[in-house]
Figure 1 (cartoon, rainbow, N blue to C red):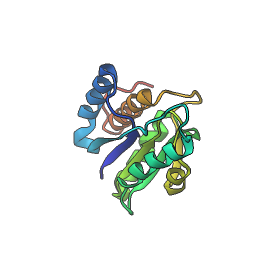
Figure 2 (figure 1 turned 90 degrees about the horizontal axis):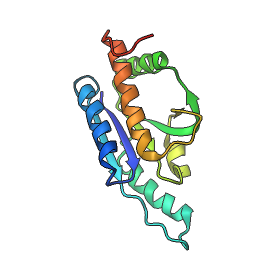
Figure 3 (figure 1 turned 45 degrees about the horizontal axis):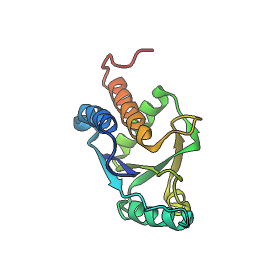
Figure 4 (figure 1 turned 90 degrees about the vertical axis):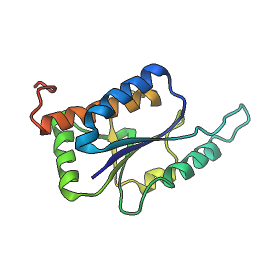
Length: 156
């Protein structure tokens, strides 16, 4: 099983890249995590936002295999506790299918990405900047993995 995050946006700030790299390194052996960046469609004052989102969606969907289990990250998605995330990760590991998380850009995910998704998860009821979503997701994956492995990182 592999877990990947396909996220809109490239050239993140150093602190974002550093945070993602730190947690990704910690889960590499247990979850085989990878991050794929999709370029943000260029936006101007006269840009059609829907077309920009569609262009981003084409890049996202090209990275997904037919048998991947896809979860979009959205404010309106289902909320899980850390323990529930750990249980879901254990289920996905037992199933053996690859898990792909999708994170949109500043305008969110196009409807075609949402239609491809098997589930929608929310990391918070707050609207989060997409660079921060990367760090939050990979940290929660590490936390779930450490819980499953009996590592003391997560305290209840």
